[in-house]
Image (cartoon, rainbow, N blue to C red):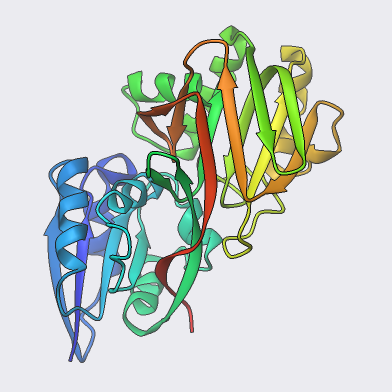
Length: 293
């Protein structure tokens, strides 16, 4: 009998996580399935910490990228004995999809129960804060504040609308960025340090990123006109923006970011976690994840 625990973030997917789970899941033979709901980000991290100390076959996370980000805070160094699986019921599921987890909840549950454990990379700040998808400065941060202030449920449509609205009022930030083999100084529309190819529900900002290559992918979009960025917005969605003169794409095991002032740096769509000056590195093979066999 496989003992599997699923930690549910009831607020994921605009509060629709429980509905999606109830519609999609059916009992599985030979599986002792346990369900527990988180009450807050801190409680979610605590639940993950407790699960890693128990005799479980796997522990599932029912939510999106933000749910994974909060769960990572519960993993003490070296404490990832129990493999983690993701049931992608969030508004942004880029980490799960980037690791090969099926989009369908029932299929993702099959991976959680009968998949194989694989080591994948994470991003790590000097302070030890980890992220699964992205850390960014600039336009992304303003768009997230618009999203959090909105009465609309979290969704890809809201993410796109927020990005377009933020573009209208955004003022480029002056930053200094260093990576292995290069530096940049100047004003940017945004700079993203990515572990996955996409984030935010499908923005393919780092099309060459891999979750097991031991490197982070840096995307810098230099200052440009709002009109030009708006016209090329579909290219960012598709991942073909690397051909633009204003865009710089590089790989590096570490990235250092400074601003003239302390700039907030969201992690996986979560605000108020870290700020510049900030050093990020790739935590190679840092997470034990259930993926399709």
